[in-house]
Amino acid sequence: MTFPSFAGMRTSWRAMIERRRDLIGINRRNVTLVYQHNPRKNYPEADDKLLCKELMQREGVPLARTLAVCDGLFQIPETLETLRGLEQFVVKPANAGGGEGILVVGERLRDGVWRRAGGDELTLTEIRYRLAEIVFGAFSGDLEDRAFIEERVWPHPVFQGFWGDGLCDIRVITLNSQPIFSMVRVPTRESGGR
Image (cartoon, rainbow, N blue to C red; front, side, top):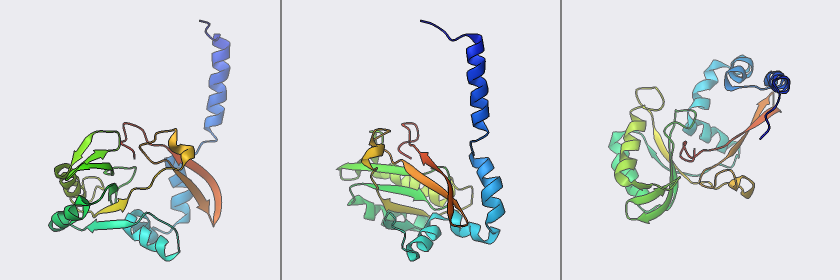
């Protein structure tokens, strides 16, 4: 086994530092693009996934169907009854970010039991608990939130090789209706398909 020379490692390190300046991380993106170019009054519609879906649907953007909305603890039994007959779905908080609180539910194994993305079994009791966490605001930082259930979307075959049990997504960031950069978010085993 041969190891690179110290000079070679220093050259590689410097090249990596130079390329780093070309990267736009989430903080730089927010400070230089989002905050400067978007009025604060629009944040509630952009931050609430259900409100944002309504806006995008009015504009004709194709989206995953919303199968149920759970506005509070009182709706959890009704929501669970809706889920009982579903094969695969995704549970999401309306107001969380970074994939927090999302539960990807795979194939139905038997009544009240599914396979979670990643392979573990998931029961109706665990889903009840997740819905309660969401409506109590555990993932959004608010005192309350709404949970919603969407149909599960499957990855395009080009992304299947990354991790077949989760969904990669491509995000295109635009400024004044012009695309300026894009990114691919890739799920990991640790993220549970999110």
